[in-house]
Length: 250
Image 1 (cartoon, rainbow, N blue to C red):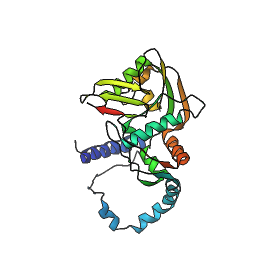
Image 2 (image 1 turned 135 degrees about the vertical axis):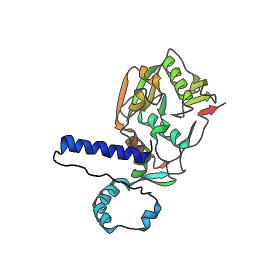
Image 3 (image 1 turned 45 degrees about the vertical axis):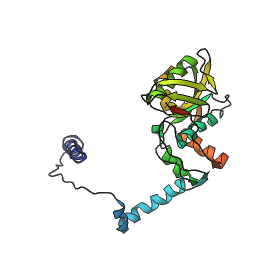
Image 4 (image 1 turned 90 degrees about the vertical axis):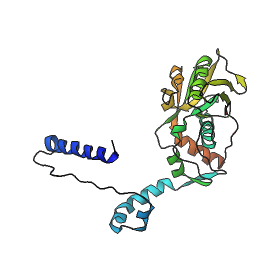
């Protein structure tokens, strides 16, 4: 069904609610619509009345979005199996894992789908990070048995790559099978307990990371993922990233 038809259906249902429940005594006699393409062409035709309405809110939004956090030495994008932005964000998870006094996590994990914009090269503002990580995801650390961590690596392989920290090396096949996995240069020990720094959304097994639901203890870091990213930039001032072969397809 086309978007326009869906919109008309919604209006009809809304009109029924108005007539039957919320606004007795009123009737909707007709519904009409038109298609308006939102393109740069609209920027050439300013609307003074609309500007006056938006201006007070614009000042408030700008005060939140424009403060400078630091700068990025490279532009960072998101793509599978490995990318500059996902590498940096996963490393931030590990960096944040010590925020409450815990030992440093063994690895960091973040989903590609949670990174919604690119990192600009040069000055990085607060608004850039809000656009990259707009969700209310919180950083957490999970304790997991090695056997479950190996299953997690298979989850990552089946997704054809997610954001993993510098401690991780995966070799996967083009059809999403795990061929090998190491953490800090060592094969995964099934009898060992590992600490995974990630976000609560993934800890629930979302985005096909179902192995994370098998975690033992969970430690909340008390901050949103985007706040962790902002704090990392403020602390380090200059950030960078590189492709290191964290996930290789063979």
